[in-house]
Figure 1 (cartoon, helix red, strand yellow):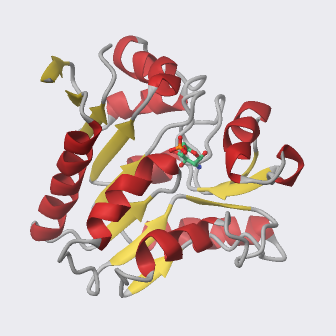
Figure 2: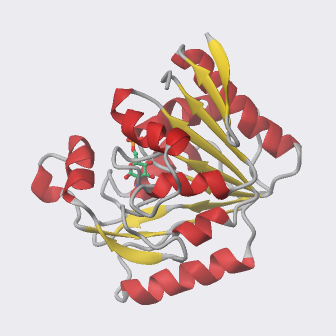
Figure 3: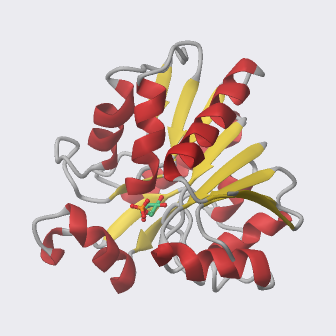
Length: 237
Ligand code: GLP
C-alpha cells in the first residue's frame, strides 16, 4: 500500500520495507542526478538498507562531500560503534566521497571541535540531509528540549537514547554518555531533507510530527517548518 497523507510535509507511507527503501534510494539518486554536491548523512539501523542499496549501485560520490550528523564523544575511531567506523563500513569503503566530514569524538577539546564543525557547516551548504529519528523524537543527537536555534554542540545523551542504542554495545555501561551533534538550526539549513521512520518504536515521534504543534520538547516536529522534506514511513498514522 502506498498512500500520501495530506500535510505540509510530503509523507509517503509504504508498508513494504523493500519498496520503502527502493523509494529512499530513488530519492537519493534523483538528488545526485540533480547535481547535489553536499550530502548530510546519518547513522543508525534505519539507514542500513539504504546504504546497502547505495553500495550496490552505480552512484558516484567522488565529486561530492559528506557531512555526518553526529559522533559519540570519547569513543575511539576504531571502535566498531563509533560513527566514523559505521560510515566506513556501511558506505565509504565502497562509495568514497571527495571528502567525508564527521565530528572528531576524540578531540581533546570537544567544545572547540563542535565550533569547528559548525563553521564548516556554515561554509558548505548541505544540498541534501538524510535523517532518522530517535524514539523520543530526537534528530541527530538533539534531545528533547534542545533549542531550535542550536548550532553544533556537545550533548549529554538521555537515558532513553543510551538504552535504545545499548543494543549495539556489549553492555549499557559502554554506551557513551555524550556526543557532538549538528544542531537543529544546522540541520534546518539543508536544502532538502529525507526523513526515514520505520517500525512501531518510532510511532510516537512520527505521530508528533504529523499531528502535534512544533515544539522543542519533540525535536523532529521542527521539520514542519522546513520547505522541502520527504518523510518515508511504514506506519499508518
Ligand atoms: C541515533 C542517531 C540518530 C538516529 C537514531 C535512530 O541516536 N544519532 O541519528 O536517527 O539513533 O537510530 P535507529 O535508526 O537505529 O533507530
